[in-house]
Length: 114
Length: 113
Image 1 (cartoon, helix red, strand yellow):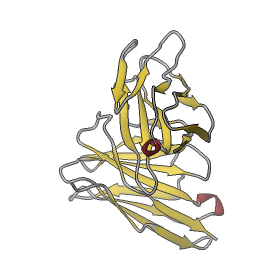
Image 2 (cartoon, chains in turn purple, cyan):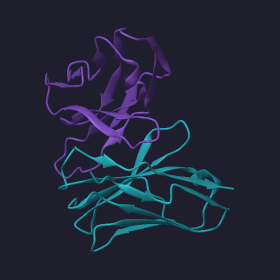
Image 3 (spheres, one colour):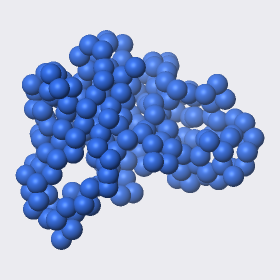
Image 4 (cartoon, chains in turn red, blue):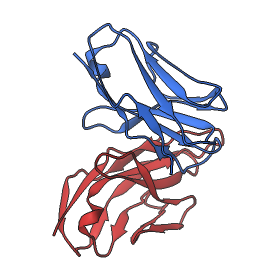
């Protein structure tokens, strides 16, 4: 079945460091891909999305490119801030038309040191 | 702005008891999703409703049932609770059935003793 695999955490970086969180997926057809973020004590929030191959989603300095050839959707940010500390979830919506559910990866906890 | 409200935030039950979790979506949202996240695990999709009808079903045990009411709030009913049901239960809502912009509640932490 469809699934998402993302790098295990926790990931600890210093402020202004470059961030990459790897995500790969398994899916039939053409899924939509997402990154969700969960700040402490809050629910998940959509961070960015890409709906077709080679699309780049971006928001708040974060970027991810839908790579069909490598079935990947890695999250990157050029200079992280302490406020980026959160848990990041890679996710997909299956490509078949009746799909309404979103399938999540296991999450990667990111901690940024001042 | 109003967000997705889940109640209760925390719930402690014993084995074989029943539990009811409630979810109040963002006003005007017509689609509700339920997810279960065990300790250190992925959020697993349980079930979703669109316009008060079940729209998709995931790995929801037969001991669980859910429904969406006329005011669009949803309840997840869990019976014959087992230790393995201890998890964080998230509800999310969206406007429309195929909308990737899900808004999540903060979850209900269920502990089964």
